Image (tube, rainbow, N blue to C red; front, side, top):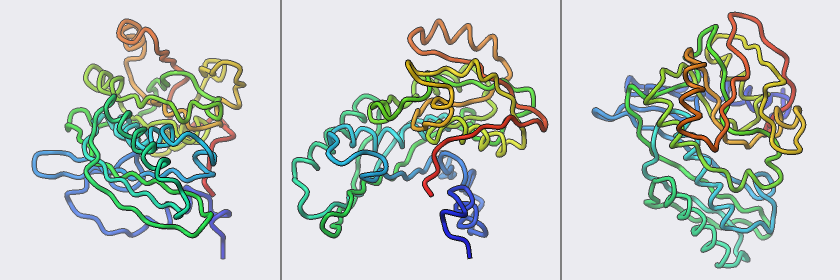
Amino acid sequence: MKTIEELGEDGLIAQLCEGLPSTERVVVGPGDDCAVVEVGDEWVLLKTDAVVEGVHYLSGENAKRVGWKAVARVLSDFAAMGGEPGELLVTVAVSREVEVRWLTDLYEGMKSCLEQFGGVIVGGETSSLPAGAPAVVSIAGRGRVSRKRLVTRSGGRAGDDIFVTGVLGGSINGKHLDFHPRLREATWLTENFSLTAMMDLSDGLAKDLPRLAKASGCGFSIEKESVPCSEDVSLQEALGDGEDYELLFTCEQGSKLLKKWADCFPGLRLTRIGELTADQEDSLVGGWDHF
């Protein structure tokens, strides 16, 4: 029998989700950045995400930065679907020897992120862990998206241009704790252009681009010399470091989009890195896998 390590994260998720019950109200189920559920006349985004001490941040890290990251990860997934943040529930599990100040600082970081990007905390849960166990902070979020602005991973078509926002790689230097979810940019994109597929880059371009292409039933070809690398970062690090939380998306109107983007977001790069193909698929190595 295979272990979780042998199966890998994608294989594990596919196996766990196989045969799950659904209803006609589920617009998008497991496998995208968020689930989408029809509630009356509204499409609701549902997302849960967790940060674990020793996995997503180092012990001794400033708790305000941990709180910011915990919330920003969920908001980034809302952005990846073309949506906006709504209500959040927070679950915190820590051992009893953790100082109260650490938790109050954690919430200060969460509130700071929400004040800047929207959304509110409406409740949650606390739980104790055995002495010395790593802290776990889990955020469950509810967002909103209009029918005309919803973008999934699965709508890409052969010939679509592939774009990424910002620069990639070097997240370990601190970017993964201070990143800005691209909500404003996603809103502008979905209001002005017909994006065909989109996701946020959490596990690295080398891991996430194949996921988007596979969901769209396509291959992909990228121009590796065009991949926008962070300062003092190699191409392989840009492809595989992960936790960039930039937008990866596909669109037919590439040249027009680039021109308008420069006028609206002069301080943020947008780079065409390739195109989706009918069957060709470049070989990419790297990216983050939890198992």
